[in-house]
Length: 166
Image (cartoon, rainbow, N blue to C red; front, side):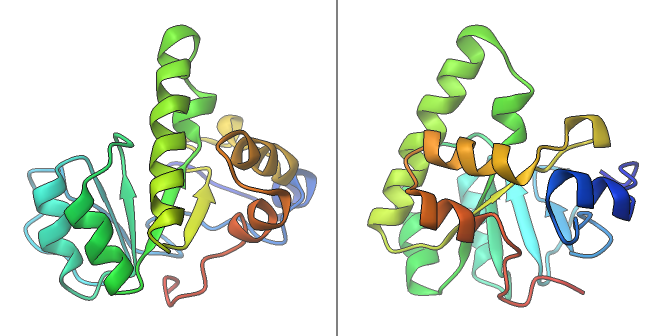
């Protein structure tokens, strides 16, 4: 993600005031990386639910569940501690065929369960290069595809304002 360089004109063309780069404007830690020993603040991402739950007990502000699978203990902890669930839509836009259908199904279940649990959800691109960036209209449409109403979708694609940015 460090190789993704965003200029102001691209942000403007896509309909955003600003595009934040993970690792630069916000701290993003992939806990599935064996090199990572500890986590402090920012956003954590990973598929290992036990590690996510353990790291979420610290001063983490948001969580990205990279495999879109629901873990009830993690969701309960997020709801009790006012943590944000960030759902990356690049997993949908960069896949195709049956893989895309499966990703949409799992992501929709995760979104529905999170909202029923009173967790704030933020839809993010998490694109690895400018080529995979999506416009604000595309993010809203994808959020609506996953079950968000238009008002929630518009609000959820804006910056997560719970102290994530450096």
